[in-house]
Length: 292
Image (cartoon, rainbow, N blue to C red; front, side, top):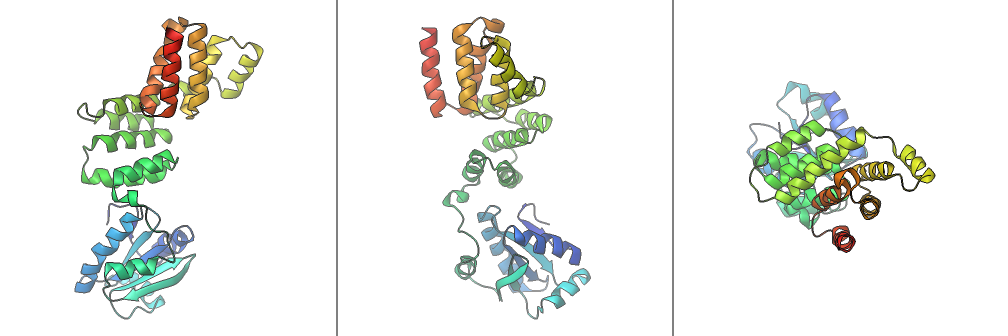
């Protein structure tokens, strides 16, 4: 069984219906009919796995062991007569395929009309995962990172981003445990940012909801507590600009609020977003001007 979330073994007709037919309505699925005794099968399978991984979830690979008794109905259903046979499914139907071992170029050419070429960034799993995270595709980013971490479970940057993905689906304790496994100081700022994200999510869970806080502020625009709590709720939802604006306003109006809490929170947000983020550049300058 593959560790990849994009590659799976078929175990009977019910498994085929779910993992191939149903999945193919969402993403193209390659089905590799193979057998243990088939040397060309063993040569082809690693190539199919490599190509599938490059698509980072835009293509799936299902493997059918034709020696297994449970797969004979599937073999007969699709008239497989020689191995290896590879069939591409889309929208529940076979749409293309080939028999015999094929070169990589031929396989890619067959796939072109059916699935978009993988992004160049996908060659670097970490860059691909970061791009997916930035697009808000947290589950997809998490899947890429799981594969990367099976190869190197001490990859600090991958652990930090994986923890942030976990946090986005509210697995906060699991995310905290992942961050505790990060070693070294090379990614100190990213680690601080991930911990800040967990802090904001935990705090937000204990606060009044956004609508209630906005109502309080509509009644009293200088309600410092409501202002701060709304900023935390916004940070938990990644609404960074209004949160930064509220924190800076509160700091300017009452910098001693909760013993300087708005200032400390602003610095946490800067860690979370990173020094190169345009909002950090802008609000760091505004904070400097407010202080001096």
